[in-house]
Image (cartoon, rainbow, N blue to C red; front, side, top):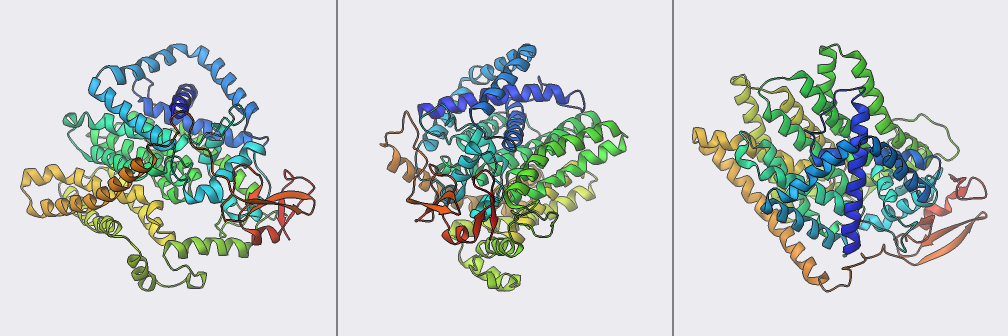
Length: 567
């Protein structure tokens, strides 16, 4: 746990320095939020994106290990020297967050300690055993391997988040690999949410406050999984932060302020583009692009528009390049974009089968032959597999959608419809539709499932009080009841976790990545490892936990780095 806390501090420091440098560099090309107005979370998030892109680019040429890390530190140190005034101001701002208000400082400290406790122990996410940990190890050892998705198709599920995780395992200097990124992300965005809620009374609108509450509920939900570098968790926290910041900006301004709107929404839009590279389940986040794009065209800011397009391309291009190298497809597992004819390309039939499995498992059908089953056929089956607290969450979506319709009609009639908030809710709805029509696992869309009903409470609570509306009171009350079931379930889970793991000896060093039973196999002169218990080991690479996939694969050359291709 002590090592986890030190890791949190190290990552935050590195991300803050990187964020300040990148913000200063971008200010030469596009409108940016001044550093004195940009929150610590905003600076750290900018740094997180920049370092993730750096790790992705570096992985295209060499392994993400000691050299990658040292080059990062040297670059940050040199650039930081010339921006030492800005660094000093940010450090002062960070200190004031803990010292200015003792209650706030104590709350942040408790959140960080809780994050460190849950990160240091427990059982890893199933997908971490299947591919997260092994994908990180491959990035550390090889950077990227051509056709690796042939060896196990899960390696085609590329994520910028895993590249960032590989950058901070520090396995090149420690006798173990760290897996603390998810805990650090939880601590950062939970403290961000709490900070905003402490100023509740100063807010005229509470849409942003309820978006912050959604972040807290999500953090509460995923506490027992913080030790896992799971792409779901990082992506959902990231998406919720973007949408929360978007809502906070637009409820704080009464009319369009072009320069401010472009600086804030342009920044958040670039983050939303990057979110796609973390996990495809956040693909509809790019809808946010519409707002700053409209403003830039309206104001004829062509130079800035081109700059935004180039920066957005830089954010997403390394992810796409890694996709092509890993699987031969621009976006895996999407067969509608078929641009390349590479020797290591995963066969289209395998890709389609993989994509079909994701859909039918999400719909609880578990049979790819039923991929094209109509909604009336699979929806009852999907519903029957949901626990009571999950059903209550789905009920709240119906109520939230009804409140959204009422809010839209009311604001349209009073001519108080705000374009920025229309984009905000449109983004949430689009993500929910994408989630429902592709792979409706609750965890894949949980951020948006939480945001819609809670933000509707924020929109309508004051109207309910002013107009003494029984209808609004009833709808809001039922949403609260629905969430009570969800919170009760995960409160119990968290308490059980604490009870079972409190006595474990991970107060200095965190629990290591899981190992598994592996067998070394000679694959046409190249050694690969096959796990016998359908769980990959972090400690052997390349490792596949699906022997059938290995059997249909052969090496391109005589080394792992040369890659793999289908037989």
